[in-house]
Amino acid sequence: MIMEKNTIIKDHRKVKLKFALVYPNIYNIGMSNLAIRLLYEIINSREDIVCERFFFSGYRERPRSVESGLPLNYFDVIGVSFQHEMDYIRFLDMLSSSSIPIEADKRNLPIIIAGGPAVSSNPMPLTKFIDFFVIGEVEPIINMLLDSLVNRNLNNTYLSIPGLYKPGKSTERIYIKNLDLAPHAIRQVISNLNNTFTSSFLLEVSRGCKIGCRFCLEYFLYFPKRERSFKNIVRIIEDGLLLTQTNKLVIISSAFLDHSQIKDILSFLIEKKINFSVPSIRVSKIDDELIKLIALGGQHTLTIAPESHCEHLRNIINKKFDNDLFFDIIRKAKEAGIKSLKLYFMLGIPSEKIEDFNDLDIFLSRIISLGFSPSSIHISINPLIPKANTPFQWLPLISKEDYRKRLTIFYKKARTLGIKRIESLDYRWCAIQAYLSTAGQEASELLKLLLEDIKAGGNGDLGSWRRVLRHYKKRPENIYEPRSIEEPLPWEEIKGAFPISILKKDFTKVMGDIE
Image (cartoon, one colour):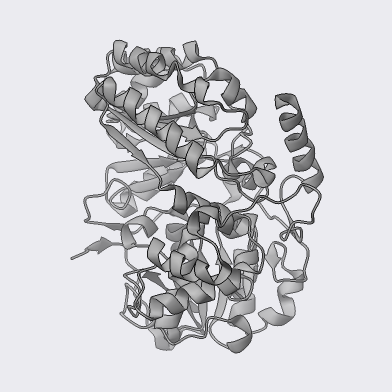
């Protein structure tokens, strides 16, 4: 049984608006998301609104709120966070299982508002189902949005709310310019589950990244890089850990090593005897002191995403560093007491050839020679998946055959060296994700068919997708088709951090350089 601290229970008779906060995945994943903790705290800080959380518990199961066990259709407003495209069908099933019409034009209440990175880059697959989308970061408009919901006049005011999208309204991404002015979840809900994230205080030290990897949605959604001041971070830590009653903390950031006072932050945590975990680190010049601080905080595994062992392939995706720098970090990590490594690799980078993998074993064996045993190395391999509003939104997905060949080589070379902990995504799911990431409104019909399959007993698995795609004479592995750089994009009403013309210029240049 899940036991929580800081759950908020309100008297529904004393509020003007009942808000359902939905994360369409399981509890563990949803409560590992800082946005859910933040929105829960902000919305419930208002006396005129009650906010309760919902998570996905299984297809065809009627969802009920964590706080009161009430059904989803009891609430006036549903706010849903989409971190991944694969959550789309789970959300539609949650609506259907709650007797809520899934199509917006057939529904008066509840009003449904969606946000999160998946729909901020491309909301088009869901425009038939969702009433409004928040494009970008919600903090600058949250109370304006909530006021309109309480006053029941959002349909009249949405045009004046920046970052709020409804088809037909050209919408520019909204973001908060000064992160010190952004609220941070302080009285966070944590649980008794044996999970690093759900039982820890989540601390955001910075947002965005300054590097600009061409495949990375994080960079293009959260540009420019911003950071919280050391003074503000100390206040958040002291207040948050007091109210959350834990000494475990997880740092949230896509580029935390780039924080101008990262050593001060980590030293403060160590001084206060707080155990902390850090996210994946970028390969850059890291001195011995910084690696030691990470190890002293209780971090046993270091996560790094080299993406490729080939420098020329990393240059194409704009992840530029030489292998000597990477191995220097590995050496320092071992000397500092780090016990294991998790490494992320990417297949299908433009110009990649099968011959590029000839020296993969040399790269992996050097890691072992620096002191990490094969059993302490965990490798994750995924294809490069095109994402809307990035320069690679026009990129073809690696073919199934090429993906299979490269995986076979990767597994063979790694296992020959004794590395057994290797995981990779099924190509068919990669193709489905690429499709949903770059689809237009036509995807709504496919999602409706998928929901019908689930209602008839399907599990939303590849079998469900195969049955649905027969209507289109397709299979999961060939559902994705790259868009021509000349054709209009379905999401052109969404104005991201970079104009489409800039993305197109960058894509054309990098592909031209390859040729």
